Amino acid sequence: MANQEHLNLLGQGVEKWDEWREEHSEEIADLSGADLSSAELGGANLSEAILAGADLSEADLSQANLYQADLDRAQLQGTYLVGTTLCGANLKGADLTSALMLGTNLSLNGSTLHGWVYSAHSTDLRGVNLSNAILDNADLSSTTLFGVIFAGIDLSLVKGLETVTHEGPSTIGIDTIIRSLGKIPEIFLRNAGVPDSIIEAIPSLVGSLSPIDYYSCFISYSSKDQAFAEQLHADLQRGSLLVCA
Image (cartoon, rainbow, N blue to C red; front, side, top):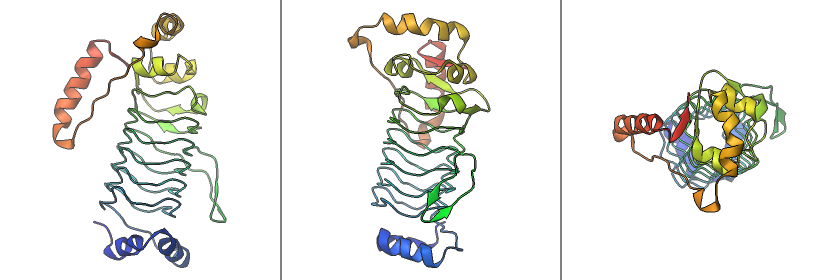
């Protein structure tokens, strides 16, 4: 449950919120479970904030500081994350379907934010749904992945895929390979669990397609339909529509 005082402060606007954060830097902002859908939070200092289970769908978080924020199971569908700093953030179980993430910083590198230099911490992307997200120029350097769904997205412009740590397999959609024109590092695909036979076939697969063959498919569902969606996902996998280890 979110701290009502913190919610009220955030409701006064980003400028007032950032002033309060600067004056109370020792206090952890608790916005857990808050309904912040479509909120205008561009540039907000939400570093180390507790946003677990919060609804941030279609919110504007561009240029926001979410360093080490707890976004466990947060709803980030269609959220505007252009230039947002997510270094060290916990995104386990978060739904980033259709999120706009151009230039989003998810890297391990230390960052200078609001005048303070932070030490490096691993960004947790385990279980994240990146279906249909726009990741052009996003930096995934040295992030940790496991069970991530890369469906219907273009990975050709994503930075740092060669440095990703895979703690287990992730799902790489055929549509993602096609949208990326096959320009995905082999080491990334292999460590995500894609078989060598599929990796070797990618150049000929992409080369044989005409523009009309470039399409995507993703499953969008509410929490009450999760069991059905998971079964459908498994059936699609068995039908070879997705490459999944």
